[in-house]
Length: 436
Image (tube, rainbow, N blue to C red; front, side, top):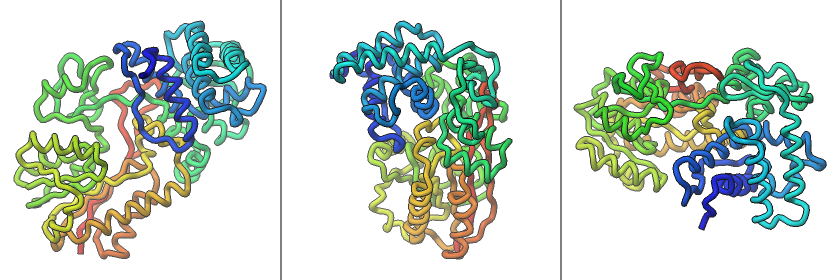
């Protein structure tokens, strides 16, 4: 059974993640036995560490007497957890962060001298931390950026002199991804995108009304859930409201004006876009499927509560040949438009991974073609910023399948460290096509 200590839970999680880094994927922290306060602390430590993995490892490497990459994964996990508390979290006493991490090392039997090394490294980080500054933009080598727009003026230059590498280290992104953004968007926009990745993404509701606990978003029709409010409680008070970012909602709204008899949401996840489609098309039969077993269970439960939504087994897709008037493909992607919501995606982005994802996206298109009725519409969408997954896909569909592109929209994400959460929205892409 997991030891009911929040810092132990975080160290344990990060030690396991260090074995897989940089190939990190969403996974829950084991908080069994923790009360709400301790659960939130464990999850905050893990999130800060995953978001800023390369930032923290750069700082730790600076004060280590050996290479970071030679450190055993479980010890890396402890060092990351301790460093995150000392450098990135507020209201965590230094002595608690250091002492609890050292005790974790002792209990996990990492060998003679490891606990002493961890203690020394964390205390060196306290000395390196320097002074808190109100505003930090990453233009100097001794700035540690924080999510609220402030930072630490470090006692020494730590980060790289070369600007792209320095920004990657300071914001926790992979250098390969930032290099692509510099080429695609230019220095100013790439820097803005990198800084956006430091934001804490708010919970945004669509279809609610302003009330205590909800604040109007800059985008009309959306509200931000205030910190500490329970999403389930807010949804219960607003029948028909859904948790959905404006950028994701915009994709579904591309289908307004269509009159489909049967809609298939093929990559439905847990059904957020499915609910939106049912609301936008009250005369349509809405089918939804999902290949992930856990998400399909949630989708099936959703369908049981809605008389026009049907959850169908993906294995039965061929029974729908030529029946679908509107096919919705919110495909698996690199998630580079939603990195504040999917922090683990920033570390695993690679050329090989992108190529693999494009192959999956093309295969999904090919697999669903038989279900299309003549002249059916297809809504293709991603939460990616990468052109290979976005604008290049409709061009591929036209070349190989003869589909006509009717409309496309690309959104860069909005929101910077320190900005009001009401200005935040994700990035992404959507295209409406007509099949041949």
